[in-house]
Length: 206
Image (cartoon, rainbow, N blue to C red; front, side, top):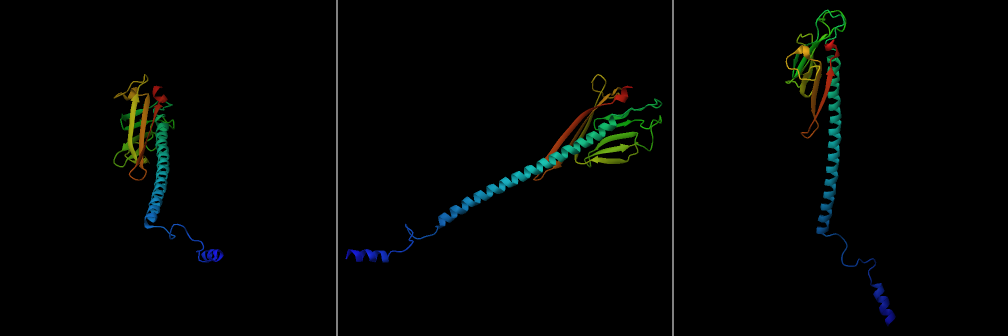
């Protein structure tokens, strides 16, 4: 009798029964899982966006720095030649100097005069309307853009003792140039870089 009862219970027992009730997820569990997944996806997107923004900003910053340095190098190379006059026939040097422009002459071909159709009369100035560093030759009004996205161009002048020169062009021996370039870097961000240097005009003291 005991044997039959045991066999009966075994025969009627459900195979693979899950203890504790029916299989599946409740609505609350599904909502919790979706919430956790949403938080994880949001964090990943935020991280990707931040990294992409950082990469863009760094790329723009490197470009702006290079552009500013190139503009300074071009001006420095020519300003350093101001007053070059190997034949000492004609008086050459800085002919105009203010806070945002400079104009100077040099006799590069050794003719004793300043050529009217060459590169011996050069000016650098800031075009605020177009935000450009501009080169002007021979005082003819023709301007050639060198650098775009310029927000500031400043010149300061010093005599041989390092004192600031205001109005005496003949006393200028050193020119300090400062150029600021800025470019957009996305999401209303702007990258700005300023490059400055001092140029010793050796030919002006001769």
